[in-house]
Amino acid sequence: MNKSILTDLQVFKNIFNEDKVKVYPDKLEYRGINNLEATVAQANRIIQNNKLKLEVNNSGQLASYKAFEVLALNGKEAIS
Image (cartoon, rainbow, N blue to C red):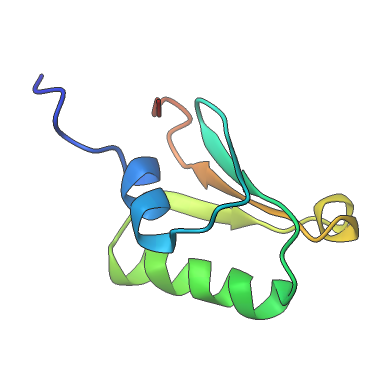
């Protein structure tokens, strides 16, 4: 497989372009978001418009520190 092919997580990270991101192998965690509701809506639009196999997790625990996650649906994506 060609290593230049981007995973859905990489595509999302490039489009979303937010600095406060913690990168994990199967998810991205965005922290310190001022307008969490609007930012989560924007993340969902990016996922839908680009047909990415991702989902947004905005649990109460994450919301308590103004954070949300973007998860790979297949759980097997790797991002570096």
